Each structure stands twice: as structure tokens, then as C-alpha cells.
Length: 138
Image 1: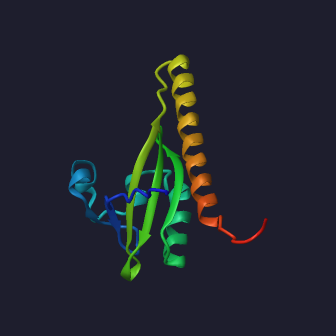
Image 2 (image 1 turned 90 degrees about the vertical axis):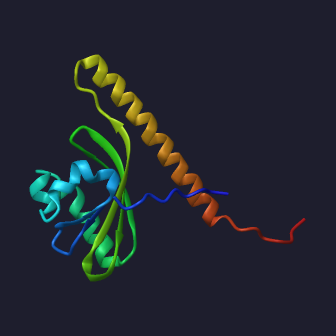
């Protein structure tokens, strides 16, 4: 049986991508940003994240994706809510260490291993959902 981990919403955006809600766990980082447009707070992030957020709003279905930004690889879960709001939660998968070429190489290897494991978990879950028992036969 597959186990799905539901991430608690950390940040809530309104329809204009303003930060309108922050969970207590993220208060220190995002609390001061309430009322600000997300893209103005995190330069360069809009083309990386907004297409997924827009897709979640259009489809009215949660969207999960993995993205790299500012040295961090994270799995993001975007859940659409009423009035164009979007609840965002994420899990940090890896952080790239650019201190030296050796630490960069080591952190890249670790990140790729983590991504491979997540991909394999996803494939297993997808296969489990599509497999059906067919009775009969010899």
C-alpha cells in the first residue's frame, strides 16, 4: 500500500499572487512578507513557479512538482482554493553547497540520488494505481 504524505500549507497566495497567509512554522521567513507579491520578494522565481501555480488554478486540481531555486531543490505542492487562492507547501529535497568544487560535486551527487529515489517512488505509486487483478485464466 502506498503512503501519501500531506504537507501542511505554509503560505497562502491570493489571486494576484500576494502572500495573504503564513503558517507558524514559516512565520519568521514569510511573516514580514504578508501583503507583498511573491515574485517581487523572490526575484527570478516567477518563470520557474508561476506556470505550475496557474495550472493548479485553471485545473482546480493540486499540482506537485520539483523545482530548483536559490540553491535549494524542493518538491512543491500547490492546492487551489476558492476565490483564486492557492495554498503552497514544500519539502526541501536537497541544498547545493557551492563552497568548493568538491562540496558542489558531493551535494550534486546527493541531490541526484534523492531525485532518483523520489522518481522511483512516484513510478511505483503510479504502477500500483494502474495494476488491476483479473480473475480467471489457467
